[in-house]
Length: 206
Figure (cartoon, rainbow, N blue to C red):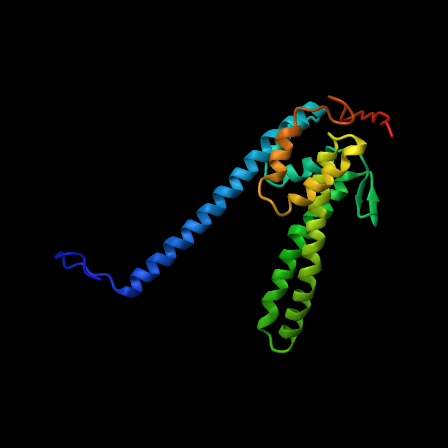
């Protein structure tokens, strides 16, 4: 490739390499912008939710991973993973979510490095592959429960189906969960404004 009479030449291989390098940087820049936008869109309404609920540390909404903790603990209801594991200590739900979403995949990835070892590596690779799929499903379910419980704080008993639909839909539709939080953040939570530490759930009409 020749640029005029400057004598400066770029080989076709270098031009192709530059193209793919630019494409790589552009894709990761887009991903970064998406993640930051999604984080801020959620952080603002989540801060309002925590503040109006009376939680002492609403600023956790702006801290990565701490915002997931906030989403888990704000609801006053019992945490339940498909009815198989139930607890009123909602911090345990947060720990479970972090473990299946981040810790376990990281550990599986470390084990995967051993795949270079003949025979043993093949067996480890097979095991990690078999584990990764069900783990991914469990992680998605845990994420949906996290979102459903938070959205359900602002919906009457007869409207909880909407919270379920929004929680599941948010797994597949970008920005659905942050936008849902924006719509709901000015409403009163089911235990009342400022009652996070002394939640009183009113009787709901059947």
